[in-house]
Image (cartoon, rainbow, N blue to C red; front, side, top):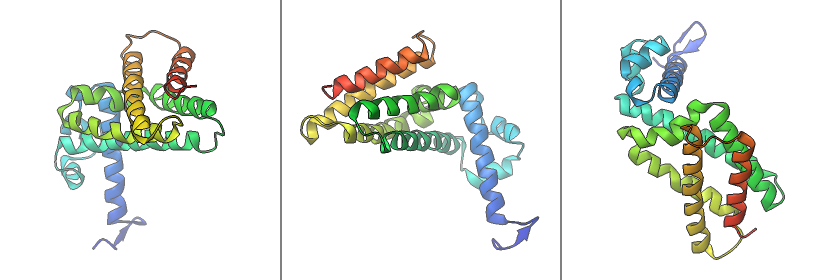
Length: 196
């Protein structure tokens, strides 16, 4: 059955496309309305799909919210990896990484809200938010040059916590600074943490 085609696409392709539509709708709602506006019914309405198709891809709302969060988390991880790949010095790596992250969460504030604010308010993400912090701390730790492995890990965990709080305050409007000042401050934090 999965091999059959209709209008040039297989059943599996159509199912994957519907899942993408639901994740996109979840990103829009969770990133604009927050947890309260992200119900199964609202997501289906936004995606223009029936609940039957929702349950084809997700067991429940929590599973969708987790998929949205993981989708944005992977985009952030990839943006950071790409940003530092060809940067030859610690200063340039810090600048490129901070700019890439700021672009992701500021140019599309929905992604920033999903990644940084939703885990604070949505029970479906409370545990998962803590799950991604070690991933980002590991990425940061790889870029640090001072100290032994344990020292770099301690610094990376603290730095990710500090940066997360700065970004959260920026996104929720309680830190009214320009984008450039935000970037400059975060770069300074990164470089200071590594002894530069």
